[in-house]
Length: 496
Image (tube, rainbow, N blue to C red; front, side, top):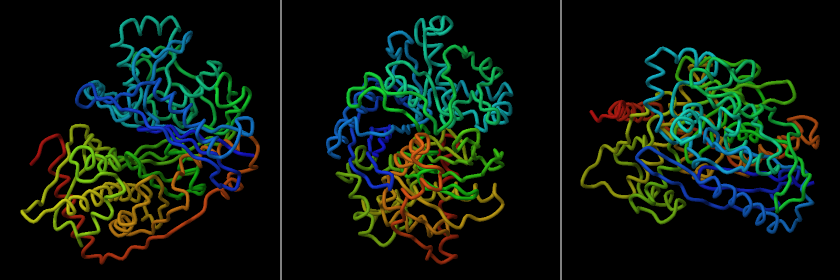
C-alpha cells in the first residue's frame, strides 16, 4: 500500500513513495528557478512549480517500478508562507508566487506596527508582523497587480499557499482548501478558533471571497482528477506545512519534543500539546497539526538562512563546486581561527525579527583561508539555531535536553557535532533525512485509515546516529560571546 508524498520546497520538488513501514520505494527531485526581480524580492513561476510536481511524480513512480494506480493515498507538504493568487475559472496565476523569503512588504509591516496593530496580530495569530508571512504578501498582490482587487471583490480569484495551489491542480480545480497548519502562517487565522478572522482581514483589506476552506491535517479533502501520473480518484488525505510535517515525521508526539530542520533555512519546533503558548522570547505560536477535532500546537523559531549560506559559498563566491564539499573543506582546519559569520543574508528571523539586518563576516586575517570561512559558515548556522534553542528553553522554563534533526544539511557530521556542542544538548538524526515528506506520508496514512493512530504511524521513523556534547563549558561560553558580539554589529541594517 504505497503512500505518495509530495514535498514542494523552495528550490525544488521531491516526491517519495513509501510503504507503511517507512521504506522508500522510489524518489525523485526536480529543481526549478528562483527569480530575484529586485533586491529583497524572491519569486517563483507557479507553472514551473507544477511542472516539477508532475515530472517528479512520474520519475518516482518509475524508480519504484509502480503504476499510479498502486498509490493508496497522497500527502502534501510545502514551503509555507509562499503566496499565490490565481483565477478561479481558468486556474491562471495573476502574478508569480511571492516566496516566503521575500521582503517587499517590510514597509507595510512597519506601518501596521507603527499604527499599533501588532499586539492584535500577535494575540490572535501567534505571529509577529513580518514580511515573512502570507497576509501582507496577499495584500500587496491585491493592491499592485492590475485589476486584481476588482477581480477578487467579484469572487473571481483564489488565494492560497502552495498546499492550496497543489490541491487545486491535483483535483482539477474541484477543491480550494488549505490545511490548518498553513492557514496558521498567514496572519489571517485565529489560532484558537482556527477560522479566518474578520478583523484582521479588514486591517489588511483582504476580501473573504479569495480565501480557501480550512481543513484538518489528516483527512480526505479531495481526489485526483486530470493529474496525468495518477488515475482519477486517488484520495488526498494529508496536508501540512513543511516544518509541521517534519515535527510529525520525527514522531514528536509528546509535549516538549523538539525537532530542527536544516533546509534553505533552519526551523526549530517544540510540541506544546493542546495549548497555544504565547512566547515571551521572540518565538511564534503555531498549529502543529489537527487530527479530527484534536489540535496540537507548537512554538517555532526560524533562521531564514541555513543551507542557503552554503549555496552562497558555492554560487556567490565559488569557494566550493557542490554543497557536499563544504564538510571536507571545513574539516581541513581545526577551527575557524576566530572568523565569525553571521548569515543574515535575508534579515534575521526569530528571536531577533530584524528584516533590515545584513550578513557579516568578521575576524579575518591574512591567514584566513577558504577552509576557515567554510567552517565559520557551518558554525554560523549552528549559532543561529542555538539562539532559537535558548529562546525556546526560556519560554518553556527549562533547558532542552534532546533535539531530533532532519533536512539536507543534517547529513553534515561536523555541523551536527558543533550544534550539539554549542547548544549543549543531544542531537538525534534519523536514517531518512527527508522527514518533511515522511511526515506528509504519515499524515496521509492516518487520514486514509491505514494507521489507527500517530503512534502506529511512528514505525515509519527510525534513528540513525546520536551526537553528544563534548565541548568544555568555558570554551562554549567564549564562543557564544564572540557570536553575540558579531550579532550585535548587524542589527538594524548597519554595521557597528
